[in-house]
Length: 73
Length: 222
Image (tube, rainbow over the protein chains, first blue to last red):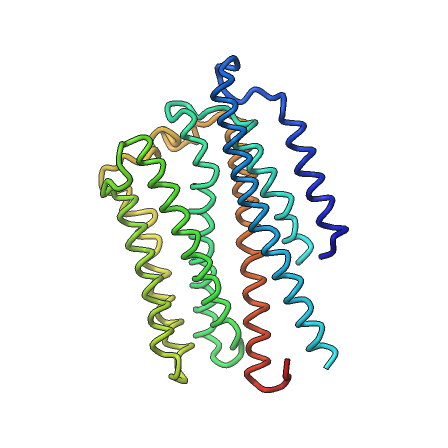
């Protein structure tokens, strides 16, 4: 998977964040503190996922490279 | 196929955003109920992984020598299943702390999932002890077939026999899923994302196993 594939994923995630930015998440929509906590939690979980995703992406590339090397031999 | 699996890079952020920013709080459980979008799919993936490992082991035993790679594929599925079982256990314990006041309550659900975890950790231990044994594939596959019959007992039967604090009765009142449509949709997206993640991880580990096999057979020098 190339950077041409990864970049749209990053843009997709950013676009989703922007799209959900105005959505009320709690029943009491005036409760801005609870909503801020939800945004913070979502940010932390997204950050964790980004780390896992990049790790998987580089493992995938590495395995593809090794498979290609074996195929060429 | 691998292109489909890479959809996980899109599905997982979508599931996270839906879980935190779109879905309303779960009735009775409140904001802490959002953990179901990670806890339930992790539990589902654990079952899927152990089921796949069991089925592959049955085929391995039924057709000896024909599908030699099925043994290592089953091992990879078990390893991933163990990781997701630990995620299930941790997310469940965090929710238990928030709702019941302590991380560990000896609830039938908690206890049965730990026993199941130990059953599959014992499989890893068994494989390690048989590393020099030429029958490692057959013995460990037989163990996984035994575990395949044990798994539904611990996941579906035991927690329903004994009284439990697990919020099944709130979610599944009268055998029907008692959740808002937004919550159901978010849960479905999350389960789809986690299922993709499982198959993606499994595919990566199977490819590594295949590479290792080729190197061990001295066909190639990397």
